[in-house]
Length: 113
Image (tube, rainbow, N blue to C red):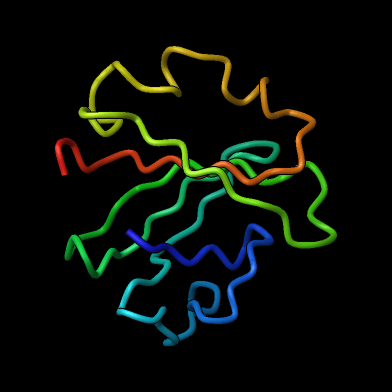
């Protein structure tokens, strides 16, 4: 699943513009919504052209967003974050990345996909 994350400082020249525009990522994937949770945490919803459905994501932005930062795609395994066996439930994920200059993206659906 290729995902455009223009609002988290990821280099996104080939991807969609922020929510509200009609631009679509190469291949048809695009950002549906972006809701700030608290601090650097956001809940995003992205339409995945390859899966032909909307996928929710948990996103933690880098501590310093003054320039593009690397992105870690943290996958939840076979349950895809739909069960209690996820990084979000079983770790201190947010605290661990608190002072790090990396974006963290976790798809929260897609069990066995």
